Length: 215
Image (spheres, rainbow, N blue to C red):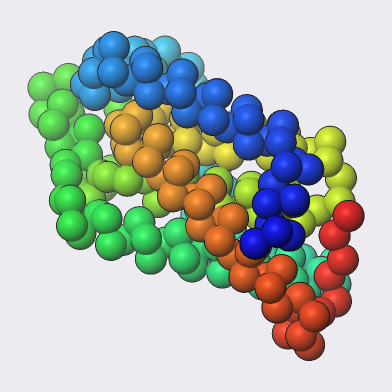
């Protein structure tokens, strides 16, 4: 526990910035409401950004997490980093699925797509249920948290946070999720990321995790 607390403190920029964004997003959500916040964030669309978001949102896909973990494990020879990325994706995914099935909520397309297509991009395949919370966002923040905590370069804290935030925004931009879904997904991702790093640090002396060193 002491190790993980010390590690989190050494990456305070990431976590303080994350908390600040979550507070700002929560206030915006409380003021505007679930529906209006979706409309505000989903108003402006251009073709090139539609295409970019359609591709970029896959950073929060489970396949991307597995590939990134494999690259870290096999090519970068960062065994603990690769395994921890994989476990963070797995744990956040399980948590998201549990919440989804306990609280089945419709997606934006199911509610508004019938009478207003302005907020939805042609050619995008839309899901219609299990909106809450966002799995892509949870995966993105779980990976970002693990990378921030276990990689040595502290200059990457804000870039990783911004990349994860962009995944969350892409889910709203593409009309797949509400802001509340993204907010809770981000929280799940960060918690699972910290938990997996804590687990990895606890067993880093074992042969299973033992070839990673963090400064």
